[in-house]
View (cartoon, rainbow, N blue to C red):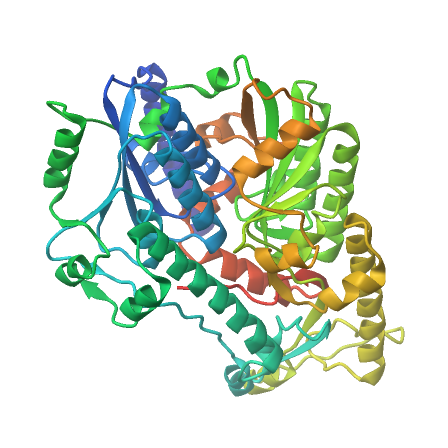
Length: 580
């Protein structure tokens, strides 16, 4: 009876939720498309994450605003605004950004490209941190309120080690890896970083910090040495930021718009948000009279799974293969940009995806574009032999493999849990979570890992058109930044979406005067679409999408740990890096 009542209640709630969604979807369907007035100012509000893949959209007003815009949509917005005579200025309003340093470089470069149009670019900051200020340095003028704080004080990277914690609860994590830098399991087996980890992390911090200093220096017309000295005195009160020349004016938002009104010599400021500006031109019209280029997004942890399990934070092998085949069979697509934002994951799934990428490459011109991270399996799936473009701050490489096996015997003892096992076969207990690895099991796993590693290096050598002995010293599980990867021949070019578009134009033999329209795969879908088209072959499952929308955990870290706890051979980045 209890289960029946719970099921009944859940059904009623789901019905109500569905009704609400359908109601607002119908209202939105009947609403007119936003229009752009002459002499408009585009208000570019950037907050939280800017995913590569369009998340599921909920057509409910107060929830729809929470759906993040994608990086490609932001890129498109700024490109359109630069050439749109109706847009007279852009006001940048970044807040609480949670993106990596590759995406920061993309948006910074897009803002800088917009400035070439000669239109004013203002930045209004509220409680800004380093990421927000990094973007604001492109602006003609930076505004803050008189009582705010500019939280720019340098960068730090924190590494967590849980060996002592696991010892207290009787859990032992057994880790095998190939490559001295492939240290993803160190958080479970050590209490501090290895010299190799410190070497790589310090190089990452040095480049990020150097890029931050140079960017501020160029934007604020200061010497790098002076910027370093300023940062050592951060964070700054608004008045201190102003006196230090880091911002231009202390004004409230309405006063900032008053300044812009004077510069534009207009009687009023006609604002349009970046969301409405995007909606003002329906997706179907964006590709009219343009050459269609697919922007295929591979985002998240790489795992095995059927097509219907494709989620925003997962790159399932079945989902990616289905997506790549759709593009392959679409005769209207002239070329493909494969956009990767992934730390890797399951080795077999990575191999399946790469095979599909290679098949696509035989049919259509292909360029690889790397986002914040394309490491380990995320690097492996790029080894189709096609040109690779990455940002100087992209995290890539990490050519290595590892295996993580939990041993819960000590925890079982503490809990008084008795486990009796019967087995047949020498290695039947190889993956048992209640027994430690003996010498024979360790040798068995090591043999397999060495073969996986050799295959990984071989596939990279083939994809980069180089010899095995040239690639292997660059492997060892080491994470490289894009600038280092370019020097070492692991990628071909430094740049972002603009560079990828120009390269695919050449490969697809699209004339310089012809317009290119990027067609995202997969395209943004609403939760109503999922409700109306739910079936076993659907690319998304409603349950998984709803679960993704409701979870507020740090998804990348959660998925990364889950992958290692599942065991098996992994091509995964050695750590989840978030430099703040």
